[in-house]
Image (cartoon, rainbow, N blue to C red; front, top):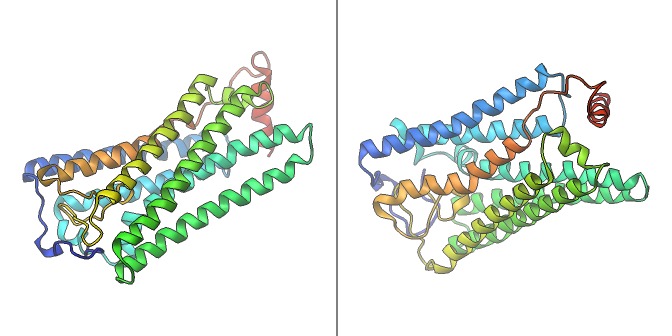
Amino acid sequence: MESNLSGLVPAAGLVPALPPAVTLGLTAAYTTLYALLFFSVYAQLWLVLLYGHKRLSYQTVFLALCLLWAALRTTLFSFYFRDTPRANRLGPLPFWLLYCCPVCLQFFTLTLMNLYFAQVVFKAKAKRRPEMSRGLLAVRGAFVGASLLFLLVNVLCAVLSRRRRAQPWALLLVRVLVSDSLFVICALSLAACLCLVARRAPSTSIYLEAKGTSMCQAAAMGGAMVLLYASRACYNLAALALAPRSRLDAFDYDWYNVSDQADLVNDLGNKGYLVFGLILFVWELLPTTLLVGFFRVHRPPQDLHVRQPRLRQLVWRHRAG
């Protein structure tokens, strides 16, 4: 991959800083983690068919996005087994797909979960106040607009930095401010929706009961999302604040310098590749795995006529919808 920032070390001179055996072990570990998530999501999509759930729903679209995200990240790390030079010289489209697109997919999954739980809350309120249905349309428009803005900013920044049409520091600042702000806002929104769904019993908490989730678990999930995405935003802003505007130092494989697209500001020497993997684990793999586990596919209750009548009503409502 050619450098997309001024003042970086030429790609031809980039070599792994860690010993080959350690680098190979880390690459195998990173690839295995993403591959495990890929097969886990793939198995859940089959469970949707096995259990007779709706084939087109918020859950299936969410799982499909996670499947594509895990596939792209697995493909990226697989390059570093034997073909590191090729990974450093990707064309514009492969570069965007492997380095930038996964970040957009991660944001889309977050907005999709917001849409789902916002719909649950607004539909419950609309039973008593029909005018609330208009609010649901506004919320949908806001999240769709946020997704389009996120995609547009990331595509434009990638194109401009590849063509050297703007200062690298300025591009990174714009992308970090927009992207991380949207991540934090959506995480706060998801946490609020989860709390509303859990506390508005029984009209909305039934949706969490159907997933085998308690109010405490919902609150913990919301808090974890806020903490993870807020910490990433703080890291990125601190990294840019400490970086000289004239030169942004890359490390190891010439990644560029914020966490959501795999980079750091300071030269970490032999620890660079390890820290790169840890960054993706904490701020990408961990939140996505938590969401996949939280919204995993459940077996429908077997004895619906004797136990849990509210769950029976929910299951039939979903199948009919």
